[in-house]
Length: 373
Image 1 (cartoon, helix red, strand yellow):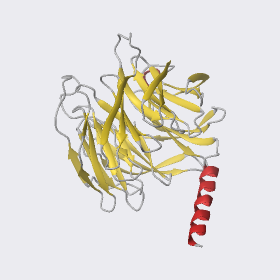
Image 2 (spheres, one colour; image 1 turned 45 degrees about the horizontal axis):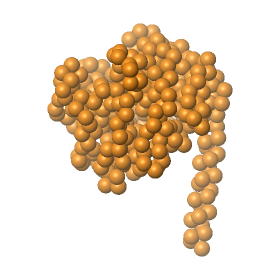
Image 3 (cartoon, helix red, strand yellow; image 1 turned 90 degrees about the vertical axis):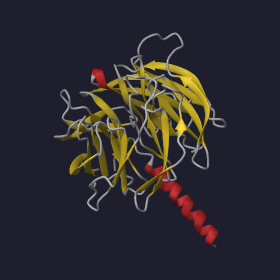
């Protein structure tokens, strides 16, 4: 009897999940740099079937709210305030009906130049990576939904062979596995993916065995395969993606490293963002300088990547991009040409084609989608 009830509950849960994913209407949240005309974080109504969009709101009075993170219940939004001195973490409540953000708190990020932020699966802890300070901080989420002062800031130490970019540690992203235990922190400055284990009861991070990348690689952003069997990092400085086995003990073992640019490319380029299609069949990365999105197919049994194509990003300096949950569209934020270009994605081939639609917005950096209820 118990087994039958459990199976029924599981099936019901799957039905609810399926229904939740059927919406075509989303709120598109855009983090920006406020160095030119941008006023803060922008929210758009976005339809993933048609690619149509309309502005809903703007959270103003913020300093460089570049990268964003959404709480598990999608009712709170957290942002870095990317400043060279005294970086900040902003916390907001999010009204799904109106698409409006209301600021709840502002706290120190615990270091300079915060560039990435993540929320754990319980919604109790916010982690922020301080690029300029070479550190990561963990902040508690308060009963109000705001954040408290950092409980702890962990300082990374070291350097790399690139004297201009790797003179010291530069934490670049915070990535939390589905088990809410393993936390991977690529550090561009020391060529390392630092591994921590999170105790979600008290917000402590215990350091585990790190993964070294190639000297001068400059690991930046990181993503898990939907199967949780593989993980991938995009290396900013040597223009590559490295594939790993994500082992049961939390360690990462190399599978392959592959270039993000054509073999004959001779210009200046640095890599930025990395994402996998919802079906787990394709991986995408962004090139700044070559100004393109690279697409690879993923071997589901080995995790190995095979180049499919490299598509112009439709602007300059594609800092971040997003694949919509249906997998139909890819939105690319070109920071230096003030546009977000919308591409159709072929689910069978992985290839991208421009829709002809784009959002004009000053210095877009980070894109997040929340289902519209």
